[in-house]
Length: 218
Ligand code: ADP
Ligand code: ADP
Image (spheres, rainbow, N blue to C red):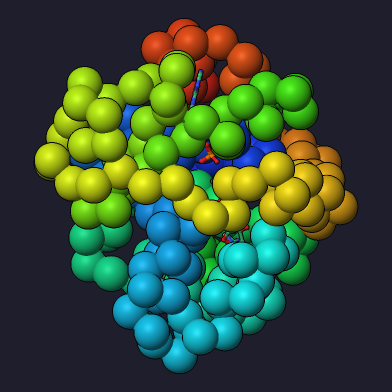
């Protein structure tokens, strides 16, 4: 029996990790795990994790590694991930990456590829200020690049669209700096491990997905 494959989406905020992960997961018939979504859910539910995470999310800083790792581990241990999964937004530090490698090994998962999506900073700003997300199902829209059919309403489930409050100019800048300092060293880490695939994210969603699909199949 082959081991269950894991695909990681990495890249700066707004590069399209969530958008691509939501396309890839159904194609592979595996769940999509988004660390950002799980943390926002924890904040909304008022759980212990949520109480800790709230201030970090609001400020655009990373939640402490042990918190991120606990949340990710709990998610991947679920029965539904048994045949593999797609994860975005985790790992985001070298510490997280090292511990993730170990837990994947223990749980008999095979980290297949890290799909690193890159886009320039000016594009990041345009993407994040126009981003809208569905409160109910998490679908991702953009006011000009990928608008919903009806203003403020999700095409998929009819839920209400909202703007994340960390998608402001000020917090986006912090997140970008945090990305450069704490997350970009992962590029080197996964290149050395032979796992990294570079994806040019500055194209249409469908064009990017073609590259992603090619990388996944190879
Ligand atoms: P984006 O889509 O802009 O990349 P996410 O939704 O993935 O943002 O993450 C939003 C916020 O959640 C981050 O700014 C950070 O506060 C927190 N977060 C998400 N993933 C992690 C992680 N792996 N480690 C620490 N904090 C995280
Ligand atoms: P991330 O998860 O990396 O933060 P998202 O997938 O949430 O990124 O995308 C950020 C914003 O950019 C969203 O509004 C999304 O609709 C839009 N977007 C994603 N991919 C593309 C693309 N290839 N071209 C144009 N807009 C995109």
